[in-house]
Structure formats: structure tokens, C-alpha cells
Length: 191
Image (cartoon, rainbow, N blue to C red; front, side, top):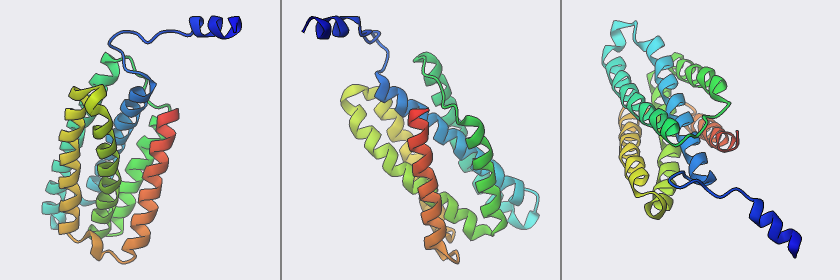
């Protein structure tokens, strides 16, 4: 009994105003996700941005990428303010995001849109769960997540309107991308 009391007494108390580990993990994942999204759009622009035939698509991708950059900057600020370390996987997500964007763009416009739709569908669900949980714990963060979630839903809907589901092998491509996103979320929560 004394040992249990001693162990409980020596556990560090949470610092006032600092989120607990679960909110830290949320911020780490959201930062990683926005970082990866920026890189996906960078990869797609590397393919589409140089070809005048794809000028309208490149403008649309650039716009979505700019929105993701705003999200990333907000999470950069939050990580600093709340003293949360980013994921150690950032270099991997840097390369993987760019590669995913470039490869799907090389597969064609519809495949690039299928990539966007798949990623944003996972992120929509992810942000919805976070928003619900944060409403009581951190309403300001919940509001930010809700705002960013609306952008992600817009990206998904835009991708679907531009032929995402018409991609040959859409079901398989979407499933692979979604699985990769879910795995990246789990990894980023931990490390």
C-alpha cells in the first residue's frame, strides 16, 4: 500500500495549460498529416504544373495545397506553443507524401484525384472523431479542427467531381491509399 502511494506521489502532475498526452498525440498526427498533404500536392504539381494542357488542374491543386499550407502553419504554431514534439517520422512522410502525389499524377488526372479523395476521406473521419472528443477538453482546438475538416471535405468533393471514382482500379487504389493513411496516423501518434 505504501509503495502504491509513493508511486502515485512521484508521478509528475500535468502542467497547467498544457494538453495531456492524448491531445499531444492528436497535434502530432494532425501536424504530420498536414505536412504530408502539402507534400502530396507538391508531387502532383511537379507533374501537372509544367504542362499547359493541365493548367486548370494545376491551379486547382495549387489552391488545395495552399489551404493545406495554412493548416500546417497553424499546427506548427500549436506544436511550439504547447511544447509538443513533431513525429520523428517527418522525413519519411516528406518523401512518401511527395512520391504518392507524383506517382498518382503520373498515372493521370483521375488517379491524382483518386489519391486526394482517398486521403481526404480518411482525414474527414479522423478530424470528426477529434472534434467530438475535443469539444469538452479544448473547444478552441475543436473549432480549428472543424474549420480544417470543412476544407478537407471540400477537397474530397472537388476530387470526386473531377473524376476520382472514374479511375481504373479506383477501389484498389483508394483502399491502398486509405490503409497507408491510417497506418501513418497510428505511427505518428506514437513516435
